[in-house]
Image (cartoon, rainbow, N blue to C red; front, side, top):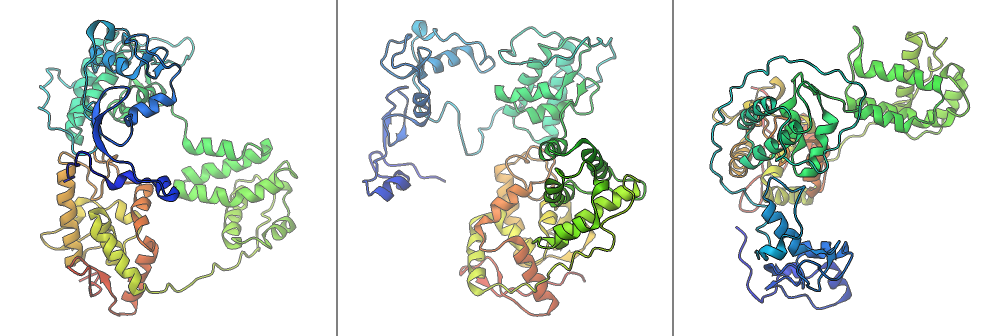
Length: 518
C-alpha cells in the first residue's frame, strides 16, 4: 500500500532528471491549492498537472465567465469548464453550457478525485436487472441505400431521442449479458450502454450500423472494442473495416508497375488463403516473406514491367552480396515457384539457385551473474516470475506462454499440459503460478479470460496477451526468452544440472531440470 506523503516534506520523485543534471536543488512537494483551478492536492509546482497542459493550449489570459486573470481557451478557464461539465452530468459531455458557472458558482474539489487513476476500481452496487428478454429483434423492412455517406458522431449526445428504441433496448440487455460473462465492471457496462444509445439516436430502423461509425465512439470515452463485441454476429452490423495487411501492402508496394503488382497479389492471396493442397500461412509469416522480397522488387521494379522479364542472372547477381542470402533466396523461390505453378511466368528463374545454409550456433549457457539478475527481477513481478518459470524450466516458447490456458494447469495434481504435452509441475513453477493467481484474483476478481496470463487490456476479453506485452515484460531480464529457453534445452539434452532461479531468501537455489514426461 502506498504511504501517505508528509505535508511540507521532500519526496524522491521531486528530483527530476533535468534538475539532477543541472545541479539545481530539488523541488519541495507540499499540500497546496492550484493557482488556476483552485483544487487541493500534493504537487511541487504552482499548478496541477491538468492545468499545466491547459496553459499550453490557452488563447487568452483572462476568463470572461469568472473574470479572473488565469489561462483561458476561447474566454473560458479550466475551473469554469469543470463546473459546466459537473452541471451537465456524466451522460452529456458534448453539449454543455460553459457560462453556467456565472449563475451557480464553482464547486471546488480535491485533485485526483474527479477522474480516479490507478488502483482497484471502487465497488459499486450491481446494476438492476433489465426487464428485456434477450430475443432476436423481429425482422423488419430494410431501407435501401441511395448512396454511402460517412456518418459523424461529433456532437451527438446519448440523451437525444432514440430513432430505434426497440433495438436499443435489446442491445443494452445483450450488452449487460455479455458484460456479466466477460467480467466487465459496472462502469464499462454503463459506457457501452451510452455508446449504444448514441448509435441508436442516429440510425433509423432497418439501417445497418457500420464498424467505422462505431469506432468514432472512442472520442466520447466509450470503449469501442466492447461495443463491437456486442454487435458481433448480428445482422444489423456491417464490418467495413479495411484489412490491415492490405493497407500495409498498398503502402509498401505502391511504386510497382500494375503487372508486377498483380503477380505479387496472386502470390499474397495464396499465402494468406491457401488452396485445397496448400495450407494458409500465418500473418506474421506473410509479412516476413514480403519484407524479404521488398528489396529485390525495389531494385528491379523500375527496370521491368512484369516478373516474366526477370532472368536467372538477375537473381544470381542480386543475391551475391546479400547479408540474409539464405532467407531472401527462400522467399524468392516461393514467389517464382507460385507464379510458375499458376502459369503466370514461362519458367522459374530461381530453379537450381542455392541460397546457402543458414548458419547455426550452439547457444552458450547462462553465467552466474545473469542467473542472479534473472532471479532478482523475477522476485519483483509475479507476471515475470511465471514467464521465467515456464521458459527457463519447462522450455516453453513465447507463443506457448501467451496462449497457455488455465485448464492446462493442474495445481492439485502438479501437472502442466501445454498443447497436450502432459508433464510434471515442479515446486518453483507451482509456487509462481499460485502467487500469480492470487495477484490476478485481487486485481481482476471478475475476469473470465480462460488464459493464464492476462493484462489490463485482455482482462475483460477472452483473447491472449500480445507479443508486445510479453516483450515489454521481459525487458527487465538481462537475456531474452529465446536465450533462456535454449539454455534449458541445452542443459536437458546434456543431462546436466544447471542453476535456476527460485524463490527463496537469498534469491537463488539449485533447481534440477524437471523431467518433461513420466
